[in-house]
Each structure stands twice: as C-alpha cells, then as structure tokens.
Length: 408
Image (tube, rainbow, N blue to C red; front, side, top):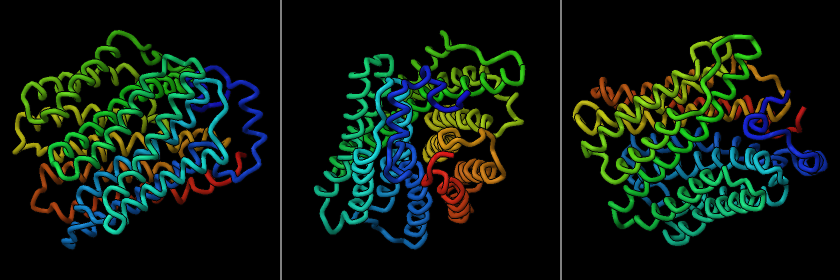
C-alpha cells in the first residue's frame, strides 16, 4: 500500500497519470509540485526569519523598502506558507481529480512566479510598491486559477472549498499591498490571510490527521480507531469560520472572545476523538496531532487575549497560531509527503525528530516569552527564531537531497 496523500483523498491514481509522471524526463526537482515548493519554502523560512530578527535587534527600520515588521508578516504568509500550500495542492489535486499533474515547464513557470515575488519584495524600495505588488501577487492568483481549472474540469466538486480558500488567500495578498497606505485595510488583510490558513489547517488537517492515524493504528491492531467525520466535526468547522471572521473584523471584541473559546473547546473535542495519544511510538504520526493541538491552543489564547490583553498579549496568541500551528503542521506535512512520494519508509529518523523538536520548542519559547518572561523578551525572541528557523534549515539539509533527486 502506498502511503501518500493519494491514499488519503482518493482511489489509486489513474494509469495515464502515473505514466505521465514516469515519462517525464526533466529535472527531478520539477517532476512533482511538492518538490520545489517544499524545499525552497523551507529555505526561505530559514533565511527570512533571521533577517527580520537582525533588523529588529539592530533597529533597522526597513526591509525591501517597507517597515521590517510588515515585511516579516508578508513573507511568512505569502512567501513561506504560500509555497508550502502550493506544494501541497499541486500534489493533492491531481490525486483528487485523476488529472495529469502540473510538472516540467508549467511547474517551473509557477515556481518562477513565486521566486520573482520574493525578489520583488526585497527590491521593493528600488522598483516601487506598485511593481512589487503586481509581481508578488501573480503567484497566488495563477495558483488559484490552476486549482479552479483542475477541480472544475475534473468534476471534483467536493473539493471546491479548498479552491475558495486558495482564492481568498490570493485576494488577501492583493489587499495587503493595496492597504500599504491604510493601516486598517492592511491589518484586516493580514488577519484575513491568517484566518484563511487556519481554516485550511482545520479543513485539510481534519482529513489527514485521523486518516493517517487510522491507518497506523489499524496496521498494529490498536483500537478504538479515530472517530469518523460527523456532526461534531461539522460544528467545529462552522464555529471556527464564524470565530475567525469575527476575529478578523474585531479581535478584541468580547463576542469574538466567546466564539474563539467555543471554537477552542470544539476543536479540542475533535482532536481527542482522533486517539492521538496512542501514536507516541511513531513521531511522524504524533506530530500531526501536536500541530493540530497548537490550533486548539491558539483559539483559546486568542479568546483570552480578547478578554485580558494585558495578561495574554495579542501577539502571543497570534504566534501560537502562526509559529505553533502553522509552523508545526507544515513541517509535519512536508516530512511525511516527501518520504511517501520519494519511495521511502514512512517513519521518523533522528533528523526528523530533531526537526519536530526544534519547531515546537521555537514556538513555545515565542509564546511563553510574551506572557511570562517579558523582561527577557529580546533574548527569547532571538532564541525562538534560532530554534524555529533552525527546524526549516534542518529540513532543507535532510530532505533537500530527497526532493531534488528521482524517486527511489
């Protein structure tokens, strides 16, 4: 049995899809969507965070001609995270639809759009904000258009919500650039993008976490198995949509706080039904539960921040969601997908365990320092950045050769 996203979301891939992959004669790096985007998304995460920390610690006001803090936020959302999302969608959608994957020249073109976007954001001060915005926004717009085409032509209507979220992410990037001179529009776009990515974790994570867990437990004849998708899952997703929408509009509102509290409780129940505590023997499965647990914790901290921002600062809750949930879940998906799709055994080696330990500890230090160790905030910020970006650097070192070479 081939353990990959294919086995989680669809039946076995059609033979013409497999033949197209086997018949590809170009560089291995561009033979599958996850390869370039996982590798260079990780490299960008490993490089951009230290650059932002250097600017912050040394009082450098601008990066790429824009405030350093705004550049950092943008490159985390629309640089690193957008790359990982692209890698996932380009891998999953062909398996959902049975259509040929994006590879070769088309994949190179899409990857070039992402790369030019990163360069444009660094050279924004030289080329101007309008040119930088146009170049940067092209990637997500084209990606969303590709996904819509594949889903519609493949008549895979049940996965339209994923296309909707990809489109909303592209629109939020346009809003981010258009709000450069309007802080309220800028902040709304930032929160909107974070909310969209959080919903992606809730929606897609709600598929892969219990599915991979069920497979692993079934192979070892461990019961009970994760509960099937049902009313509780639908309710958890529904309240998450409402809570994140309210948070995007007014994060400090008490109604928002109540909705986030309910969302946190609902997703905690959802997570508990997936039997994650039984997977400790395989970190490759356990880390998926830890990543989803960060989502639950972030909802609860965001709720607490709405009621008591002096005790739980908004940025602490925000980093539980970004550095914690998004950072951990992306590495969990990237490591598993790379192993499965390059023909390797689905088990975590010492390198992979170290990657997980670094990203989780980096997020923990980032969140805890903002709540309990404010007097050591700058040293803790540097430490958390070193741990978190170190996880992605280690991923690039360990998994880079797998991603750039042909499948075993």
